[in-house]
Length: 285
Image (cartoon, rainbow, N blue to C red; front, top):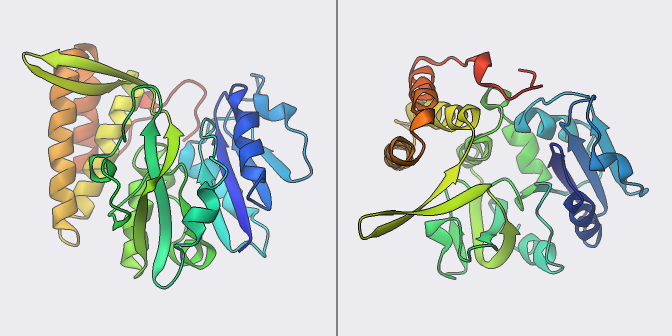
């Protein structure tokens, strides 16, 4: 299989070079889709390898738009697409291990995203090494997608801007009759951001501390998907609602200043709109 890696970046640091280098070990080429605004320097400018293509349009278009731009320039002979974030350095055996699963009806295979700083998987379903499991959705970084599956499903959803782009894509993969699976024994070190542990009485919980605009998109996009999928995938929608309730509760307890953004996201997800005011600085929608 010919694998092409698509790396999305936004104000990347020196880790980007390590990510690209690790991808080139097992991929035939790398496309870096850089959302860093034109006025800022970017580590992507320092990449100098004939196997690397850098796309830089000079503004933050969001994750989905960056992925779509990279897909548009995929080499015609690409069989499999690997999606990567700017901080996901690949273990040397990860891509070959995952690619072996891309047979039959499997359209997407993903590793187990591992919190290298705190230890443990980010996903409860993948905390125990149970081998290959079917999932409704998996995280973008580390995801391998068969080219025919990518073509059948279509473009990534740009109105989501950043959060839940991966779950929307995976649910549409399943709509097309492909399986989405995760190899729980294949670990990919990954960072979701500022993840902290908190205590509520005798209980401990983890929470990602995001800026207000990010809380908005998490709430808005998950609400949109839960609403849209309530008939076709009611079990998944119910799980998404439970996640939203926990997210809102933790925000109210530990990040009270962002409750307004969360409530705005819930409402906009219900009515099907988006607010430009909750885009990060320099973003284009």
